[in-house]
Image (cartoon, rainbow, N blue to C red; front, side, top):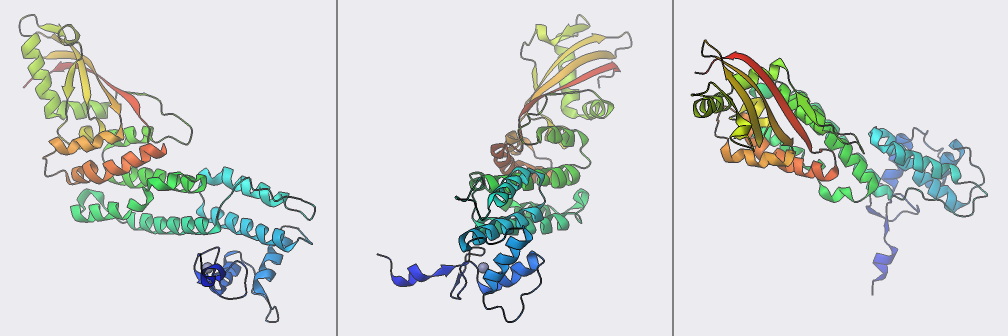
Length: 363
Ligand SMILES: [Zn+2]
């Protein structure tokens, strides 16, 4: 049996704090704030019930007159919810906002049943609004970070402070799903692609491609450009592998097609930098022909599945101390990536890097 105190306890539908004033929905503090939020002028002094007055103002603003108290109060909650959602300013909330607007429009003095196309609790929406406020603050702080010479501890703390947006439990409700999806999408776009990966063009491009807007699948990527060519030519792992292959299969004939010897190709595990962040379990195929001056013409491709969850593997073979961000990527961002994959913010796809090098020197 519950005791009377609990039964009689009123909780504010906005902040969920208990209150014992005469109002039916809001505590006095919240009601006061709502006048400001909705940009309504303060009620005249002689108004006895400022909550009822607010609901009437909302009804009038929506051109609805003579509504019953129930309808008026329900309308007020929907209108306040819509106002908070508008302040969050995420395109992904558009359908939800439209639904609430439809519900608002369907309330009239004649309507029999209240239509709830979108069901919500005002407290949940209020909490979501507070999450987005906190997120916006953090993003602002982020804009002052210089990722090229940031201290590892500071980088880690900054990324950790964003943990709350990677909460799997928020996926269940459609409104919080939309808000958390949007915050995560923004995080990957602004913090990772625009910040941490700013000087890592290939990684940034691959992550961009994997961030797909709701309901859309990313396309597989084929990449062949001078930036990537240079990354490969400078990579110790790539150079060593090519050297090994030419010695193994090309020393006698002066030419080989790797497919003839190794049908699955060779595995490349890159040592650091842009290639490490981009490719995780990449397989290479190559055709090679030796020139008279002992250089080689190489034509090949490197294949991988872009799957952010693979970042956890990085830790196993990253021992490059100059790579400040490698550790953050291999631990924290991996966990965030797993969550964003669950949300459908980050998606899997296949990537193929093609290269065609003439007169490539083996050293
Ligand atoms: Zn309150």
